[in-house]
Length: 190
Image (cartoon, rainbow, N blue to C red; front, side, top):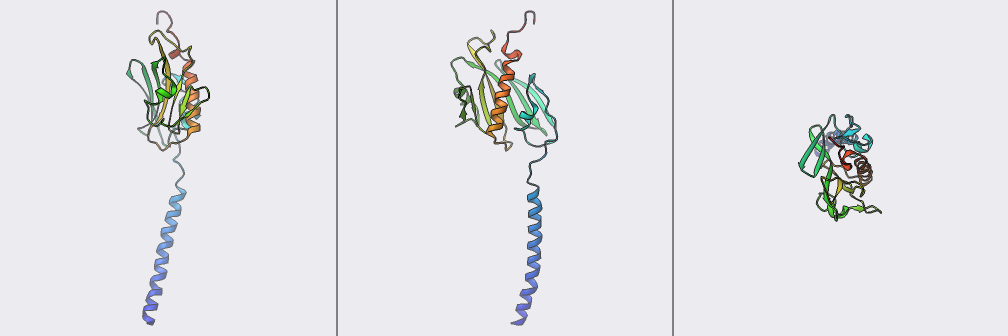
């Protein structure tokens, strides 16, 4: 009987030591749960549209490098894709839709906008991952008659879920597009 008690005591402290090491490893891993640093710089102009880099950075994941690419998938859409460390992280799009559409109607065509919050003026619909904004009615060009320009902000499976940050970026980017060449007829001779 004595022997088994001794053996049990000898195993006990070793087990406790193993548990303590495991706990220490877990605690040090937990301290690393802080989001990765955003070591890249966001330019003030994204695909020709000037926007506050801080608003963009708020909806991007951590990483070392940021790249942008302009994509024109059809005659009425211009998409500015942002990638962090080579993985697409955010899309900022301008898309022409029929003038009878609405922000809520257009939002149905985009992922992660279900059950979004609608702004008081009904121009913006957003969630923590995506949003759609309608430009002002004076934003019109002859190339897209009887259409309204909509702005779409979409995060790409980055773990970002921040409705306030999406709303701020969506609103600012929509206003920036409204003040850009996208909402004006090209100058004669262009």
